[in-house]
Image (cartoon, rainbow, N blue to C red; front, side, top):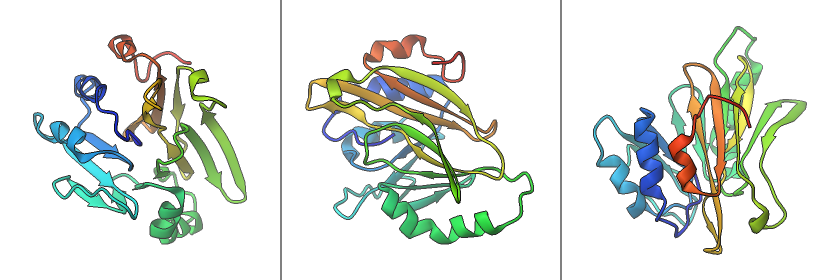
Length: 206
């Protein structure tokens, strides 16, 4: 998840949903206040929090890992902006693209900052947008959910979107859940957090 900014009220409900789903690893992709995320670390172990920040911070030293760019298990690389992803992980991306296809797990480059949930297939010279939930004005933001399979020997750019209240008026509650074992990702956008009660991450469409 990314870009909560000053919003905190809905985070306990989201963290409770994550815990109920059996999730243990949470990645915060920048523009998030550390104080709101400390309760995640205080929950029953194992709980891991991967924390990235841009040049202006904020840092969170008590997180499982903290930096401007982090390499996570399972070919997952995270930073706050796309520029920082390229800066920190250009070599890993180049090595992956240069290696012969052999059924390898996909490589994911994940970042926040844009507030627009999206998933892009990337294999030069091909770039293919697989999912996006965008709108011209925040008040037009619509709920949406999709489960997308990730192909082997492929690179994806993943942006979970913002989990916040735009201008403290318009909810844009977006996040993504990566299931590395089954090579799939759930992209979720809500306008009302009560929808978490009936949300099936990898069931149905949308």
